[in-house]
Every structure is written in C-alpha cells, then in structure tokens.
Length: 479
Image (cartoon, rainbow, N blue to C red; front, side, top):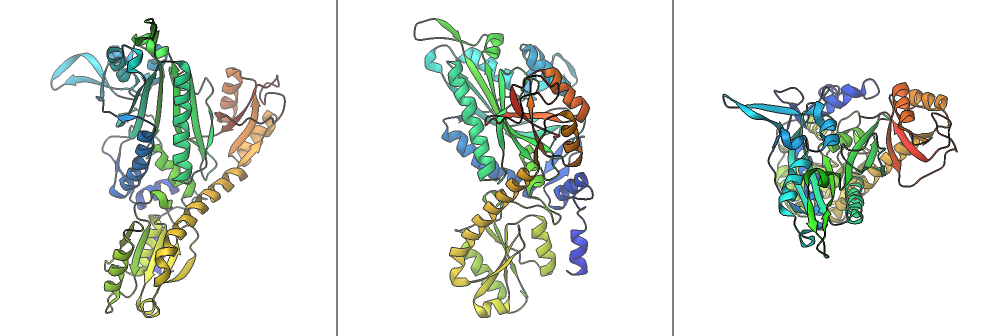
C-alpha cells in the first residue's frame, strides 16, 4: 500500500483501540453525515441519505403491501393534547422540545415539536371513526421528530431524527394483536434480508415497554463491540389511548365500543446498526441489496487510448443489471480503491489495458478483499451472483459473531463476570419482578433487551434473587 493510501486509511481509528472514535471516524470519513448547528442535530449527506432512501423505499413497499396508506400529520402538538394520556406524557416529558413564541408574541398554549405522533392520530381518530365500517384504520407516515437528548451521537441518538411511524385502529384487541405481530415481522424481514443483520424477536418487559402501551415487541441486534441496539419496535396499545381520547365506534349490534390501537416505528437509528455490525477498520461495509452503488468501475491507466471508452461501455452494459457507477476522475487508482473501500461499495471492478487485451475485468469484494478475474463474456452472469454471495456472507458473519457473543448465566457472579470479560447477549432466567430487573441494571448497567418468543430454560431460578423463574430474558449493555 502506498504512503498516500496508508494515510487515507489512518483517518480511521482502529475499532480495537477506541470503538466510539472508530464509529465517529467512519461516519465522517465515509461522508454519511456532518454535524448540524444545533447540538445533537445532524446533516445527512448525499451518500448517507442515499442508503437511508434505499432502506426507506424497501420498507415503504412492505408497509403498503400490508394494506397501509401513507399520511402526513403536523409537527406541532398542543400541550393540552399531549397531557391527555398520563403514562405517555410522563414517558416523553424529559425529551420534549417546547415552542413558546410565534414571531414576537408569546403563545397562549405551549406547542410541542412532536417527539412521536400518537396523540395527533388519536385526536384525528376520535373525530373520524364512528362505525365498525370505518375500521381498521391503517396509517403510516414518514416524518422527522425531535427528542431533546442529553447525550447524542450521529444516527444512534440525536435531537432530531427521521423515521416512519405507523398508527392503526382496530375493532378488537385480537385484530390489534395480529397487527402488532405482523409489523414486527415486516421489520425483522427488512433488517435480516436487506441489511444482513440477524435479529432477536421478542417482547419488552413492562419496565422497558413504550410509554402508554399494553405491551411492546422488539427486534434486537448485536453490534461488533458486544453492545445491543434496539432496531425496531411494535406496540400494542389496547384501548388505553382510546379511553383517554374517547375513540369509540358503533359495532354491528349498535353498541358503543372502544377501538384498539397499535403503533410501530423504525428510524435512521438502523443506520447506526449498519455501521457497527458490518464496518471494519477500512471503513463502512454496505450490504449489496441496500447499497446505492453496488459496483464501482475504476479504470486503470485511463490516460491510455481506449481505456475510458471501454469502461464507459462496460457501465452502459451493466447499468440495467446492477447499480453501477464509474470513477473517471484524475485521482490515482490507489486513492480510488481506498475511497470506495471507505464507503463500503460491495464490489470494485478494475479494468486496465492488459485486462482489455485479455477481454476480462478484475472483481474485488469489499467484505473479504478477494480478487477474481472474470471474462467479459461471463460478467453479466457472474456479477449479480457475486453480489448475492457478499450479501449472504455479511449476514452469516454477523450471525456467527452474535452466536459467539451470546452466553448463559445462572447467578449474578457469572452474569457480572461474563458481562465484564466478554459482553454480548446474556441469556438468564428472570422471576418477573421489576425490582430484580432494576437491581441488575443498577449493579451491572445491563438492561433487559427482550423476552424472546422462542423460550429456553437456562435454570429453574431467577439469576438475581434465586426465586422461581418465569421467563428467559436476553440481557446486554445497549446503545
């Protein structure tokens, strides 16, 4: 590696030395974001937004395929409306950003910049749902929200972020329950199939559930440093919000009933998971299915006659097959190699005079660095297959890492020792008492991540108090 190329890579701190700094370096050097003027805000740059757009586009298709319609609600919430559901407002109060003035005039009532939109949808439903014929209401909106976080990091926790939030209303508790399950499945499929990130599916404890929810379902993923990240949630509200907002309908017998609601969301936080699951000391690694550019053509000795013409012809040949681009700038090939490794482009296509003479190209995988010589006549068949191999390898590598970083603990001594020495997910039994959950967090800083749908029996007793256990829980330190 030449000196210039080496200096380029050295812009990234090794993850083994300082994982937090590595993350910040990758976010900046891969040109995903820049910092906004207000603390905790971020400017998502073109490349970062292109990745988010691909995630958004795929999720939007899945949401619409399940019968939901997109809507757009205002960003402002009157204080009196936010106060209607007690648990909900208490859960979000510390993070609410308030608007007190309009121009020079002080507002008669403070307005919250939405931290989430449940109360807006509830107010709408209370005025627009009258009969069982009006149900279900299956809505989703793509929006930005504000939560005044104390500590912030790009994508992972910011004062303003982008997301989608689904809000639905149903005639029965069972219908709402099925919706909650279905949308968690949509998230899990998206994250596993497109972002190549394996997830745990389960239910949050009452302590960790969404403020105002009957229960919350979650998908949890494991980062390279052994910390967990909540990657998507789906909430069953029961009739709690409906009772607070008087959302009723007349059933088929003409009797008044409360609706049953759900809410579910996935945000730009998933970009943080993408970085921390697949990234390495050379930078970002983007799974092919959501990569804005799946293959980058880098001409070698492009000043020589015919090289650029052949490279552009190759791009035109491939553009309907994969998302392909070409770097015909006057920068050195080594600089370009490092640039696209930093940005995580799944496959690099090298083509120089000798390759043209041999009617071949060189394919270089970002995930393994392996080189492959492919005849031009075979390229249209080989390149899509190679991209699928990269996609599959990234998932399997992440799954293997999660399996290696998943342990069992039968008592608090084992729990603490494993957490300190190894980290990762810890499978341990729980009695169901919130006091034990709080003590575990107080003593170890680990939190309950989920009560998995697929239960296992590690032992008969609670890892904390030693009393009879009710459920197996995944625990971890988390972002």
